[in-house]
Image: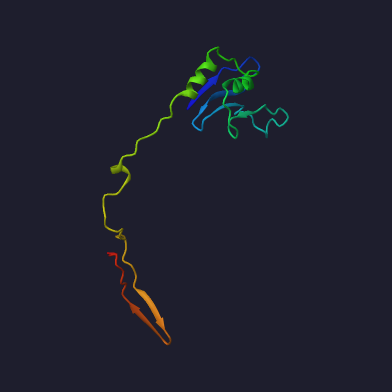
Length: 137
C-alpha cells in the first residue's frame, strides 16, 4: 500500500488530499475537510472526493485528475503510483509451529468442575455423574 499526502492549492487549505495504491488492487483518491463542523457552519459545506473505495481504478491518471483542482501534483507522482501498482504483494509466511497446536489430546475444562447430569424419570429425579470420554477436571 502506498499513501501520498499532497499540498493543497491556494484557497483549498482546509482540505486534506491523499492519493495512493490500495492492497485491494486499486488506486484511490480522497479529498476531505476534517475540520468542518455541520453544526457551527451548515451553509459552507466542503467538497468531498472519494475514489477507489467501492470501484476499481486501474489508471493512476484518473485519481490525479480528480484531485487536480485541489492540490499541486508533482510531475513524477503518476510514475510513482504506477510503480506501486506493479510492485509484488507482500505475503507473510505461515509457520506450522506458530499456527498449529502440537498437542493431540482433546481440550479439557480446567477452570471449573462440570456439574453432574440430571435425568428425570416419571415420579423421581436422579442425579448421575458425567460419563464423558473427555476428562473435565
